[in-house]
Length: 117
View 1 (cartoon, rainbow, N blue to C red):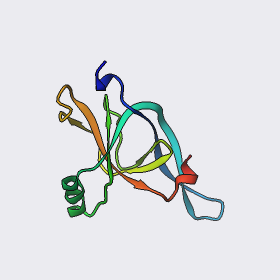
View 2: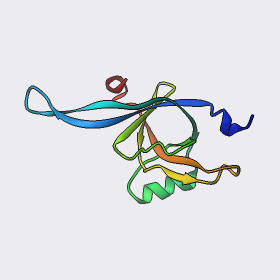
View 3: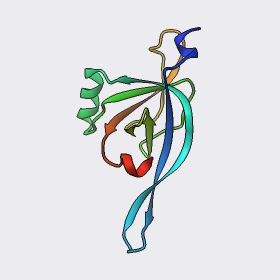
């Protein structure tokens, strides 16, 4: 059994929607897109962090999926209780050497973790 047959993590993906609250303001709500999808979370490399910093974005991690998860910057991922803001659309990545996987770049966040669960 190869690594691609047994990704070590599972993810929940949610999409953010802004709704009007009862006081006339707005608040974020989250709708589940998928849950228990196999993935592999890794820390971002220094070169990837620098590349995104040049674009004015912060990344801390990258997450690989076996198929296109359909994620973009409107989504969050919850992996092992940690909440990640997605910072890139899902793109094919052949760096696994054996096959093509799909990668999204994310930023670990500590804000909002109690409101998205």
